[in-house]
Length: 154
Picture 1 (cartoon, rainbow, N blue to C red):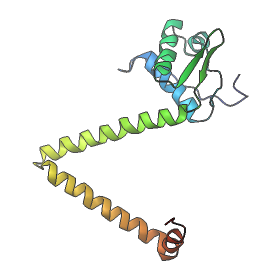
Picture 2 (cartoon, helix red, strand yellow; picture 1 turned 90 degrees about the vertical axis):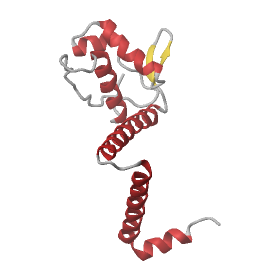
Picture 3 (cartoon, rainbow, N blue to C red; picture 1 turned 180 degrees about the vertical axis):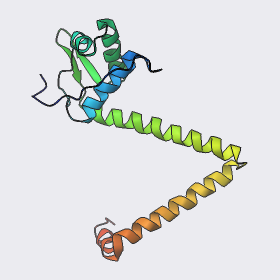
């Protein structure tokens, strides 16, 4: 089923604020991102997951259904669930969005506590973006810059 690839084991944390089924879904996402479950590969059944994590099969099924709702896995009637071909891209997009949103919320909250207005914060972000772009150009060197410019299409 899983082409002899090493499976990453995870211990669920029943004391976590995160529900067990969400932890199972996150573990499966990790297996997909690590390449242990490639696209169109059959995913563990709810009973296999229940045995692996010593949980009720209904809890494991809820984790699988969460991924199915997000189109990370798909159901093949009578055969089980399979990893979607674009599952890695979907997981990355979801995690990037959640990560960036969380950071932005923290920055905006802290800026508010410091008495910074929206325009001042946006101005600072633009300034840092320009500085980082300049730093990247300097790190690449003039030869790499010329090489890139020669390969640009008109």
